[in-house]
Length: 206
Image 1: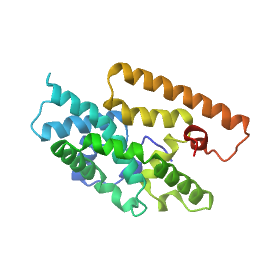
Image 2: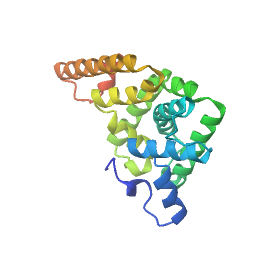
Image 3: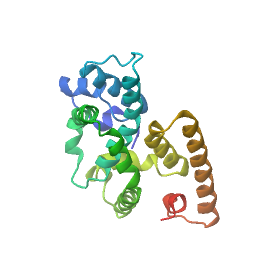
Image 4: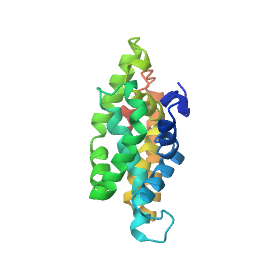
């Protein structure tokens, strides 16, 4: 499965959904930033204004996008049938989070639930190994799990999730710490000759 193809998410021709996909695409970092900018416009803000509140919201939007994806990936009830509506859902949840000021709490909730996310990723891997086709499983996990299947991928996810909550100096230190942890996890899984691919056991220790 390609991780960077819009056709994976929506291959139809509905003009409204295609427009939503262009404006509120959750699949890539660039798409997420565009979505945050467009949601700010929807709420009446200029995303490029030298306004501390707007700039803080733009920063938090990066972490919130990781929260949104993780929460959807852990929902076993979601199937490919939910994908056409995913862009509008992403937009609406961003708008609600901006309005009610819950972004920091939402991001922290996902960060504190990494054990649950890892468990969901392990379950997804087991289902694939049992022969269940990916298109019958949670499509958001099909997007997220391959990204986090390496130590560096997991580090990148955590950095994107948490960095918006930190000052620049702390962001740099946190990123460096995650990079070192990813390197250590990679060495340890290689030394253990662990062929399961469960990098999270060595990254998180559970």
